[in-house]
Image (cartoon, rainbow, N blue to C red; front, top):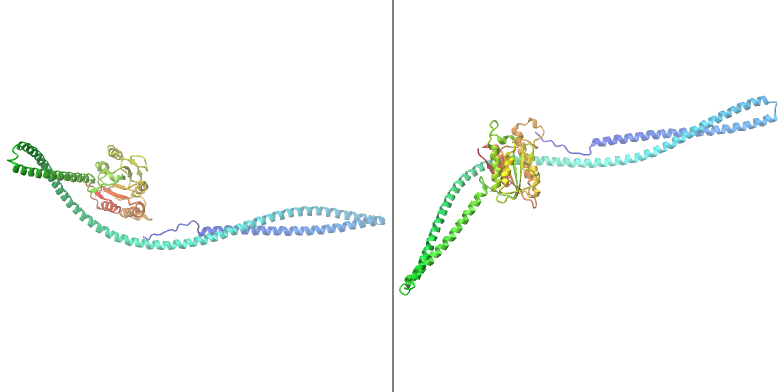
Length: 489
């Protein structure tokens, strides 16, 4: 299945569309308000011109009224006609005054509308400038995101090429793993030969111990002979002239005996030193591996299979044996100063408490307390190794130098499964999870750096002759400078 990568984005082209739509709406609103302001301005100008015409007509009417009044004063004969004309002119004058009041009111309203329109136009101009600035910023951001998209596309091509290279390396490493399996069988045979050789060395050590005891007996006898010779020397002082030659020979024999006794003492000390070194080396080994570490983590698998012999057979002795192995390793660590025990299945837990902190080690009390605390836990759940290693390497900055992993199975839960995992078989899923754990440890969590050496990982398998689990745990220990032990039933 081809791996597809989705480029993470924060600012996309769809956001630019939204901004452009918003900008268009704002410009449309500004144009509508601007057109309404122009219409109101035109109406105000028309009202102003109409008001001017009315005022001029009013002035003409006022002049006519004055003429009519003068004509009325000059000629009373035409009084009725003038009175009617005067009434008509007065009514026209009143109507003109009403029209003038209405026009003034309309002019005031129009002036107010014009002022509001001017304010709206000014506000819209400010909004237009702001929108233009935002549009320019959006265009700039779009250009930057386009460049970033092109860069990410190039990186994606590079990553795809690297993925293909890593797949080729994975095939080559699988071949090397098969070769390493053959080599492990050869090493197992060599280990058997070394066991026979160790047995021969033990027999030689027993012989040397017997010889040392015989030499001690000879030394005691030599001391007694030396005392006897001294007594004889005192007895023979009286006959010094007669037995001078014999005394000289006895003195030489005494010197030879003393030198032999001194050489036997040195040989005894050397043998005792070698015996002590052999015993210390034997005490510091567990099932054929050298036990080291001052700041140590014990990662113990507590999944449901840890109390099963196989899928259908329960084993009541398996979990107690795992707990006893933890205590045995603790007693055999010569330099252990602080430790922590982390149990893992679907999630991690601390049976001894103090999560995320080291516990001090006491040879008299700690192994028993660890045994009882772990034994009180009921194994259940799946095996999520990725989560427990993430938790364990939080201690790396606090001096973590060694990890002991006790498990009986392959990882079957946690991250590392590609999309579409529902169509994968159980074997394929376990293969993906195991590769994820090994890759995460090798290239991220346990990658050596300046002043930070690689953490040693030792693995102990309780799989009872399962070659798949043994190969995984062996590879895990080999990649991190550790040792692997497969426990038998």
